[in-house]
Image (cartoon, rainbow, N blue to C red; front, side):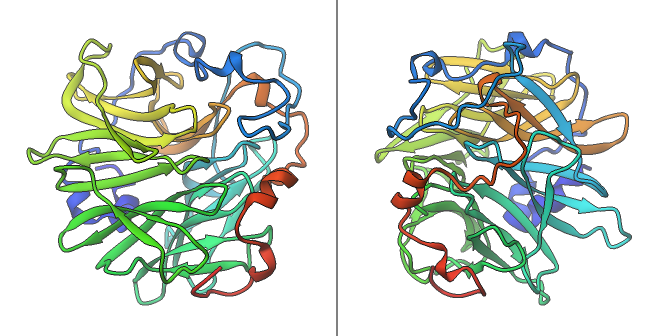
Length: 382
């Protein structure tokens, strides 16, 4: 059984484990990244100098290859690595299991263009495990940690000092397992919690971490897993129906849309086995599905357009996508029997500099409702 279940067991409890990733990984046929990977279909219409809000883009030089760059990586000293979120500066967050006998989980942030260096560990003070799961364009991070009593909490981190700046929160009414999955540029964050035997999505708005929570359940769902939020506060994830099937969804401008991989897709999907994890403001979704050969296939979808995501012959699980269409997640190395992070970076967002902070442009900072004056300690507001 995949060790990845250990990670998600903390987040989603046994109700999730009954239907997620129940089969051992199997290698998929090798397919060219050039053929299967693409950015948003609207990308060529974007201004090369400005983003959708009129802010000046950080437009670094390309690699000259004209195709996306795919890399796999392991946090130095880690036994297992998962990449979960990526912002527009291609700063990546995730978590890893260390190689000590205790096999402790730590969060990480990665900056720069070298995937053998540039990693910083993220551990909430006093925690016995930490997962970093989402990052916005200002560099604000959300995730979960477990304290010494075995209780999990959500956290928000501001600033660039990863020994301080953590703010704890717990969703009112949650029985357990609060798990923020992503954070928008205005500070709104979204995720999942357990309550009364079911899983619910939630969104938080405002600066008070004791209030401002809204439960978000898919219509008719028994369980709703909210996995991503974009810069416009649109959210995406998947839900379980009354028959135990899973379906992707997004909520944009208050409009709920269900998403299932089309039946004519190759490899052929099983009905009711689609899971969505990431979303950007162009409406691009990333996720995976179980096919009729009982193997997992990863996809990128926008409207009726669907592209497969492959990384060599590895099993691929994409978890995050940024405004540029760059994707991160995990791959299973069947030879090593281990999980590694991966990133697919578009050539127009591949930088020559390793000095990025991921804090965003000044205009983005000014639109953020919060500031970094309260970067120290764990509190009830930010």
